[in-house]
Image (cartoon, rainbow, N blue to C red):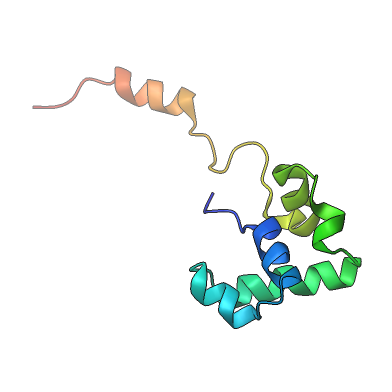
Length: 92
């Protein structure tokens, strides 16, 4: 998984009065990530004070539930076929 967006930091800096462009530029984040966090927080009616004590994983799940993956990311190989192929004698 790629780096998680720092939701807490974005909302904290927004509460301090920084613009979206300032946050993106000074914290080396994409403008779209900053915009997404602020938009979702507005839709959910959340401010920095509301999320201040929340766990980062819970917070990320609340803001980006579709980005949280559980289980295998890749399909497991067919081990039966692999073992069968490995038992074959290679031709010279």
